[in-house]
Length: 113
Image (cartoon, rainbow, N blue to C red; front, side):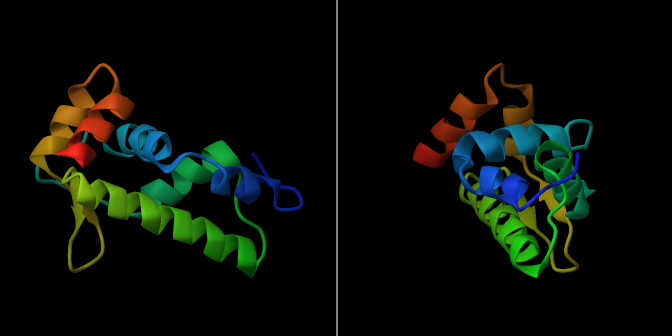
C-alpha cells in the first residue's frame, strides 16, 4: 500500500488510539514469548501495511507521533515497556491481552484499573 497526498497519515491520525493500539499490539506481539523483546520497527511496518508508508518529513513525524502515543498507551496499561536499547518488552498483562477474545475491551479494562 502506498500513500498519496498524505491520505494514509491523515487516516492514521483520525483513528481512535485505543482500538488502534490494541490491534497493533496483537499484530506486533503475537508469537513473542513473555519477557522477550520486540523491535520497534515492527510497529512501523504494521502501520505502513495498514495505512501506507509516510511520504515527506511532516507525514513521517506525524506517523512517528502516533507510534509513540501507542507505546505510551501500552506502557500505561502495563502490557509492554520500552527497554534502554530501544526494543519493546512483552509484559505479563500483554500476554493476557494476546489471549483475550476481544483485545480492545481487554486494553480498555487494563487502562481503567
